[in-house]
Image (tube, rainbow, N blue to C red):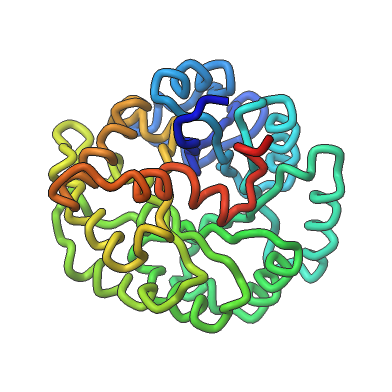
Amino acid sequence: MSERPLVVDAHHHFWDPARFDYAWMAGAETASLRRPFGPEELEPLLAEAGVDATLLVQALQSVDETRWLLETAAATPFVAGVVGWVDLTDPTVDETLADLTNSAAGRSLVGIRHMVQDEPDPEWLLRPEVTRGLQAVAAAGLVYDLLLKPPQIAAATRLCGRLPEVRFVVDHLAKPPIASGEIAPWAALMEPFREMPHVACKLSGVVTEADPASWTPVELAPFVAVAVELFGEERLLFGSDWPVCTLAAGYAQVKGALEAALEEVHGAQPSTATREAIFGANAVRLYGLEVGKE
């Protein structure tokens, strides 16, 4: 392995609309995503961007899709882990988790995610059955990814405050309104995470929350700065959100935009330790990835 620091993309997807029905792709704005995206297309992009390993994340609320992702990860050397899906409200969720982790490809399962952003109830996360499901996720040794929009942040902070035993990671900075620039309300909602060391945050998905035709790293920087202030550099992770990011930017462009935004935040090139943490070491530590080991 190269002596340069390990670089990990902590958030990307694979999918095949011929295999599964991704209803969220139905709109005209996502037409370019309605085709297969897989390892053979991502691999050269990783090489170009200097990325060594990845974390593959669910895009469908389906245990069958999770099994397919685990099988794909087992056959794809650069995929170091999978964040899958289970029904947190199912009384037998612990059995489902055990079935997944004990399967032939189950060692790749490192986390679980639910598309909370699509739940009509903004307090869905606070339901007792969801809490029981999250406790089962923690008992299985897995991380829980929080896919939020601002209306769900208040419930998420309350939930995380109640469950210090669960390791949480907020995806995409909880989708702040970058296009409008209205930073203060979102920052206020995110503030409680400051005092929650068991909650991390992915610096991912930001280019698609900006104006896809005119965004710049300078526009992203104030939102990245809030994340740095609240989470500290030891709780932040780089993620590409590929191929969703292709609605606004190419893979290398996304990574470069985060690097440039961090330079804006720091007023200079981030330290080597900061870069190593955000672009790799934090993902390895938080998700327990078996990469970079001899």
